[in-house]
Image (cartoon, rainbow, N blue to C red; front, side, top):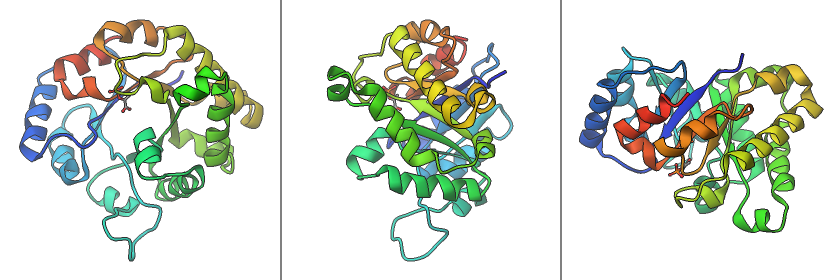
Length: 249
Ligand code: PEP
């Protein structure tokens, strides 16, 4: 049975006091689904969020990290630094990191290796741009993103990897992939994993969908057989909306 996961990516939103208010609001909600729930605050709020949420079933995860253990990388944060404030899971490869910070598949492969070497779990994001979909290249693009950043790994590494398919054209745009488009791509991703690692890995890796998921569309998207949850941006900043999505399973 694959894990169902709903992760909220708060991006570069919320200072310390706003983070505290959102956490209080989240703690007042009741979870009726079995999904694993995660939230990803900014670096400066990770420790506070970890302390504030450690008594409830909401894991605090990081939005990014550097591949090096330490050293002359001004402004960067390492896996062991994240772990020292309680963080066990990191989002890597978000399309905003790829687009605005030039993160390539090769760089991401190094980050994935560093996270796994530190016994962290990785939520690995990828997805095609609108032009790729319009030209019918979405499967080639997604297949290459997965192969280039992950296919040097052993099968056993995948117990610590969650995949997040996020079509770039659906992130923060209000435009959602249809549940059928999401299912088709998730089935393709699972087949890509199966061709390389076999069915056991393919059938146990959770694949999340991300891109304008909201309370109104979450249930239909999550009802698809290869969709194991969601990575949520905008709607994760509102506790009512986020928990409506968490409870959509
Ligand atoms: C995201 O940034 O990962 C995301 C899915 O954003 P949104 O839900 O706002 O489209």
